[in-house]
Every structure is written in C-alpha cells, then in structure tokens.
Image (cartoon, rainbow, N blue to C red; front, top):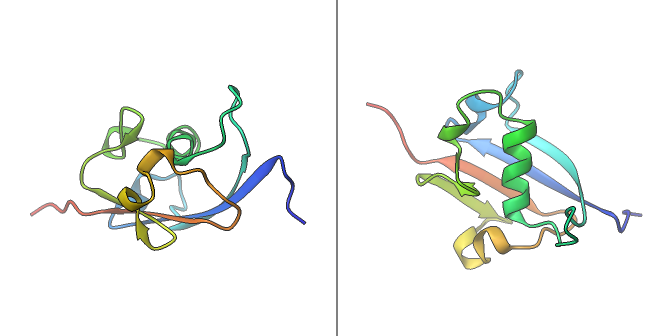
Length: 108
C-alpha cells in the first residue's frame, strides 16, 4: 500500500538529456517524492524539475532547466501525453505517473 505522504513516479531521460545526469547516467529512475512541498502545495511537475536539478543533474544544468521549467527544446511527456495537454508544470503528480524528458535539439 502506497503511503499517503509520498508519491512514486517513474522518470525517463532521452535524446541526450541523460548525459547531464550523474554517472552511471541511467535513462530511467524511480523516484519517491513528498506528496506536498514545504508550503503545503501538492507535488507537481515544477517540483519534479527542481528535484531533478538539485538531485540528479551534476553539471550544465542550464541545458535542462530555464527558470522553474525545462528549457525550450525539451519535450516533456506525462503518461505518454504532451505536458501542454496536462497543464505543464502545474500537473499534480500521482502514484505511478511516468514523466519523460527528451531533448529535441541536436548539434550538427
């Protein structure tokens, strides 16, 4: 039985975003996050992005985050749906959600 004080989500990185993570640069992560932040707000994708910035990215965070969101050129999918259809950073995370970050920017 899941705790009501935490939310468990799966996060996946692709298109080069995994290269920003700490070794071994796993593409898939299972995260257990608090159900609410310090202010009592339910944990949303904006919270998740900040968590990733602080806990998973080791260098060049500016290639992933822009303010409190992802930088342009990173596609975010929530349960296989574009996050723009789900409310973007305001989407409240639920147990079992899958969030995927894919860079659409490529060098040449």
